[in-house]
Length: 121
Image (cartoon, rainbow, N blue to C red; front, side):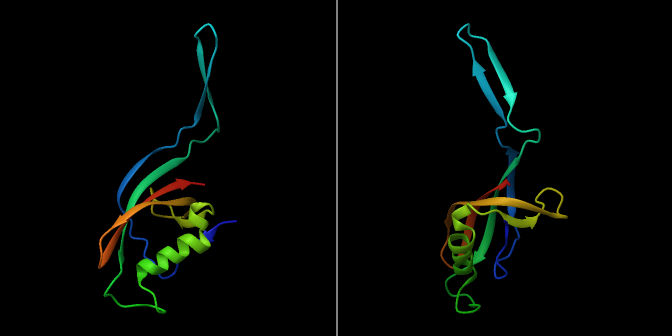
């Protein structure tokens, strides 16, 4: 079951760096011959994106900054990226797709630049 993105956090992703998730499995025989097989019929895409969030010294909504809302959503609802999330398709910008969200780090004080990895679920 997928969850929705936090209503208090923007989805203005930028700096996308996309690729395919590895979709093959290799078997090597004693003779040295190698054969590769597809794991799935449809390879999944992986997107590394950035997200700019307001933090210290900015207006709070329901007692939390945008960054605090994001952390709460990621830890308590997305369960640190183990539960898929419904988002607008990163490539087409239309329709909805399910992604697993992994936080790879953040920088900044007043505003946070959060680095995310979105993998199709």
